[in-house]
Amino acid sequence: MARVPITTRESMTPEGQKIWDEIESSRGGVARNYAAILNNPQAAGSMAGLGGYARFETPLDPRIKTLAVLTAAREAGGHYVWTVNQRGAKEVGLSDDIVAAIREFRAPVGLEPADANVVQFVIEILRQHRVSDATYGALKAQIGDAGIIDVLVVSGYYHTLAHTLQALEVELPDGMTSALTY
Image (tube, rainbow, N blue to C red; front, side, top):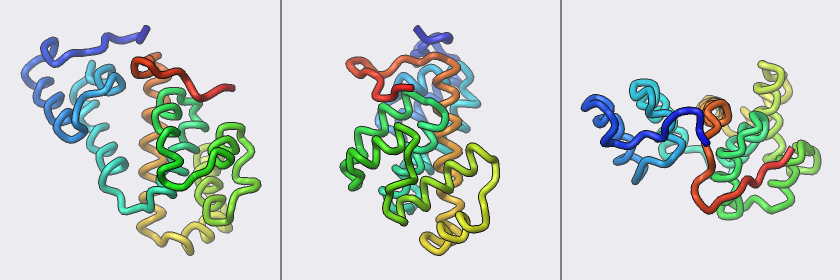
C-alpha cells in the first residue's frame, strides 16, 4: 500500500483539479504514479512538465531514450519505472539480452558500441556524479550536444521518478508484477 493516498480528481481543490486535468489531457489519463504525486499538485505539475518533454517531445531516437530510461530505473532500483518501461523495449529494437544485461548490472559489457555509449554515460552520471571525457566524447560524437542534454533530462527525470515512487511505495498498475529483481 502506498505511503500517501492515491488521489482522485474529486478529492482535490479546484487548483489541484486544474493540474490533474493538465496531466490527464497530456497523458490520456492519470496513472497511479501521478495520482500519488498529486498529493502535492504544484510539484506534480512541475514534474509532469519535465516528464512530458522526456516522454513525448524529446527528439532522441526511441532506442537511445529507452536505454537511458531503463538504465536510470535500474540504477535507482525503481520497480515501477523499470516494469512499466521495459515492456516497450522490443518495440524500439532492444533484445531480451540487452534488457537482461541492464537489469543484471552487466551492461555496457557486451553491448554494441552505440548502445554501450548511452548506458555508460547514464551509469557514470548516476553513480559517479560526473562523466569521463572518453564517455562524454563518445556519446557526443553519436548524438551531438542537444542529444547529450536530452539524455541527461531523460535519465534525470526517470531516475527521480523511480526514487519518488520507491519512497512512496506506489504499487504497480493492477495486473502487473515487478520485472525487476535484486
